[in-house]
Length: 82
Image 1 (tube, rainbow, N blue to C red):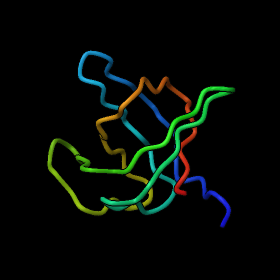
Image 2: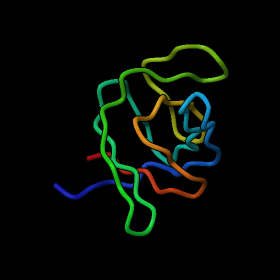
Image 3: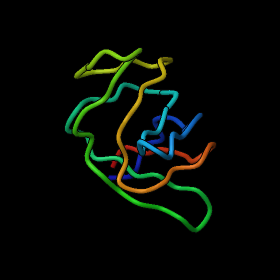
Image 4: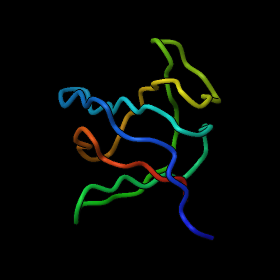
C-alpha cells in the first residue's frame, strides 16, 4: 500500500518536542505516520494528539493538531500515513 500524504508540519516546539500539523486528511490515534523532509525521515505511531489544547482521538481535514514527536520535525516537513 502506498503512503498517503495527510498534511505538513507548520510549527515545531523544540523544547517540548511537539509538531503542529495542518491536516489534509483525517488522522486518528493509533495511525502510523512518517515525517519526510529531503533525506531526513522517521516513522512513529500517533499515541495522542491535541486540537486547541484538548485531547482528541480523531482529527478532521483542515485542522491543526499537536503531536509529541520522537525526533525534530522542521516546518514544511511532509507527513504521510503508512
